[in-house]
Length: 266
Image (tube, rainbow, N blue to C red; front, side, top):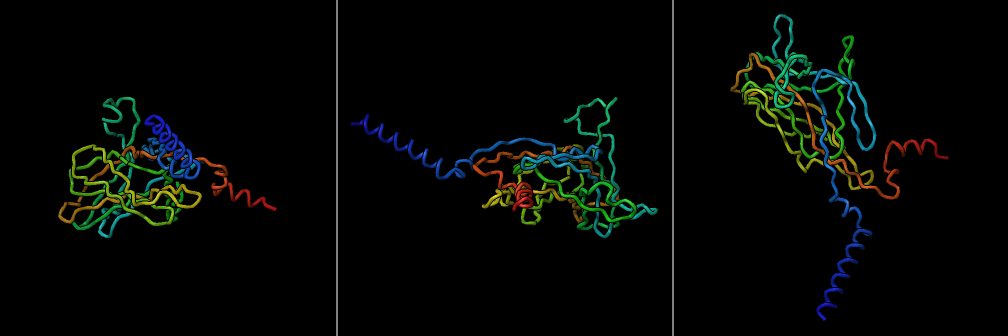
């Protein structure tokens, strides 16, 4: 009896699992992940960028620009902040030997005329869009997959500043993600978990709703000096889940394909 009861219970469990996979495939697939690491932005001075988002490859030419709050200094006609790519890097990533290497990091040279809640925004633009005195056209970097963590190497001068990253979700809402204090000496890896309250999926198809990177913001503390400072960025990297569940008709959840199909519909 006991053996027969055990077999019956095992059969019921097996039938439940099969039924669940047939009726609730989305629930089963929700636990499937494929975490991969990507360099979202190397900050090496090159302009061509390529990302694979939802199975499609996106290529753009981008550059970096900066805006600052009202008390940013202007000295001898030179407006701050100044931006540039310098021949320097975190040794923990690229090693010590500088001879024959052309590895660059992105530098921000800042000055403000007075202390306070000053800020500098650093953001990507479409390369060349501000030529001939035209206003730059901002470009928001598409983030592959559903991002879990982000980290970046930052050089600080042990000044009491903080760093934030901004992302836009599929609804158009921009979210601020604090990356931490810049009150440290030299290169340090700043790593942050992306909050789960930032949506990266929809209830309806297409379910994929990846984020877009908007900008970084450097904040100065009101009691910290701001007359002359430097911050450097290198190797913006993400850890992201690129798993996408396949189902019968999953291609019809691709907005690009749907647009092509309906343009040919009769």
